[in-house]
Amino acid sequence: MRLPTLKWTGRALELIDQTLLPGELRIIKCERPPDVHAAIRRLAVRGAPALGVAAAYGVVLAAADGAGRSVEKLRRLFTEAAAYLETARPTAVNLSWAVRRMAAVAAEEAGTAEGLYERVEAEAKAIEEEDRQANRRLGHFGAALLRDGDAVLTHCNAGALATVDYGTALGVIYAAVEAGKRISVFVDETRPLLQGARLTAWELTQAGIPATLICDNMAAAVMARGEVDCCLVGADRIAANGDTANKIGTLNVALLARPFRVPFYVAAPLSTVDLNAQTGADIPIEERADDEVTTFAGCRTAPLGVEAFNPAFDVTPGRLIDAVVTEAGVARPPFAVSLARLKGEPHRPAV
Ligand code: MRU
Image 1 (cartoon, rainbow, N blue to C red):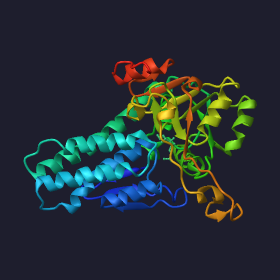
Image 2: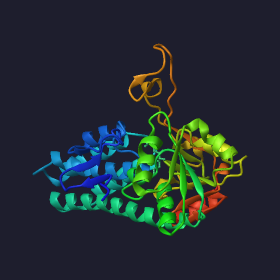
Image 3: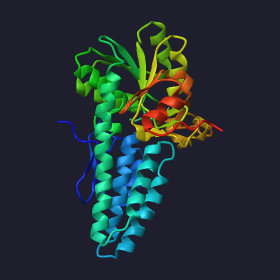
Image 4: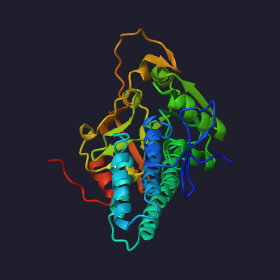
């Protein structure tokens, strides 16, 4: 049995420390909001949907400092924790979406501190369960895009480790395999932090799905050889027009796919679609520390004194994306219309 990516025990949030995979499978315990904040910052837990769920439970953990206090005091602790956890990482909208949902529930009328706690905890559990179900449903819709024998190229990790369970892009692959299709996967290693090599390759080999690891700069070569049938990635935030922020290097793959006539698909729950962001220009891009680039597996690979640029995400324009797979169905261009329809919101033309 696979260990869950995250587990709420009622008193603590237990997480697989993803920075140690695949070498070591260690569970860490978060007992206070700062533990969750730190785990998110250092990517012990990562991937847009998993960030949302972890942060939601991080808000619940604020109650640990409010035992025996009044309902107002507990409400303030929840609200402060939500605002604090939102600062952990900026790009994946699932994080702010989840903590704002938590803050809204914490603001509702509640007679007692116990009653408020129960509601807030129930909301985190609901966010967790919704993600579990969304992945299964989007996997089902996305599987129809894959044919028996297809080779899929993926970037970063959008699997069970990036969600509560199953995954988004990898969920589509798992669903296709469960439907009896033979699927193989080219896995981009995904520098600088190797989510592809360390996490996606680990998940796929555990699932018995044929996986071939390539360095990021080999994607063109495998496409040129005609060996890739489609590209399939997750997302951290999808703007109203379909522009999609995902792990740095995703844009390279999308730019290659078009001239090689390889379809490029994104798989993400609707919680990742941010209709308040009109285009990719409205998506904040996290920049991380230089040493992630100047070192490899802890060893320095660049001379002292050199500067590094380390954006954690890039934005793929919607015009390079053939379909966005969600739990409500598959969106096709024009995304400004199809995504709003799937979200159940009116299309707001850009001003
Ligand atoms: O920096 P990370 O590892 O959190 O980046 C993760 C990604 O870019 C994933 O592709 C994305 O969050 C989708 S996860 C289902």
